[in-house]
Every structure is written in structure tokens, then in C-alpha cells.
Length: 114
Image (tube, rainbow, N blue to C red; front, side, top):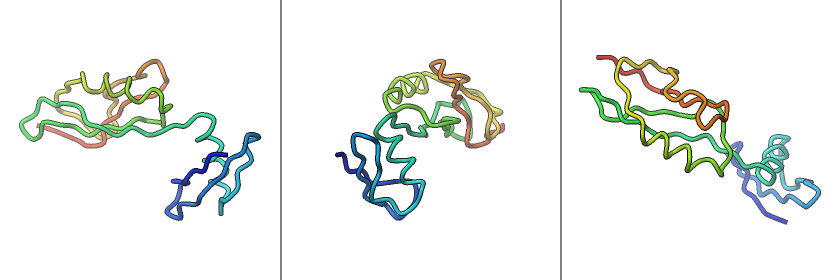
């Protein structure tokens, strides 16, 4: 029975998930959802930066539009690391559409205008 620390809220409940996906140790319903998800298909939101050809800065912060499976993180990062963008960029602009055909975009989290 794996023990997990729930990261949904600051409380950090110690969850136990059995083979039938029964979750114990949670103080809220979100812990049940997190525990089941973490055992069956763990996902994470990826935050990173891409290169930008700008006089203001050399990196543009980006984020995935939805969480992705943990087993895809390195593949996503390999693609993110190959990208170079040019200003102007606005917050929420799609930098890489439909990365790895996952239906998830890489979007800008900062505006850069020159």
C-alpha cells in the first residue's frame, strides 16, 4: 500500500491507497481524487522557459495548458528546449500548439513587447 503526501492543499495529508483504490488518511474529497490519480496516472503541470530573441530578456516563461502524464515530461522538455520565439508575445499566447499530439499547448506566462 503506497503512502503519498497529498499536494492539493497546504495541509499535506498522508494518504494510503490500497489495491482497490480505496484512499485513507485524507481530510477532504480532493485527497481521494489526488490519491487515485497519483496511483493510476500521475500528472504534472510543466513550467519552464523558452529562448526569446529579445533585447529585454533571453528567456520567456511558459506553462502547459493542462497537466501531462509524468512519463511525457522529458519528451515535452526536449521540445521546449528547441524553441526560440520573437517578440511581441502576450500572456497566454500559444508557443507550441498540441505538443506531442497530447491536446495540450505550451503557453506564455509573460508578455514581452519591443
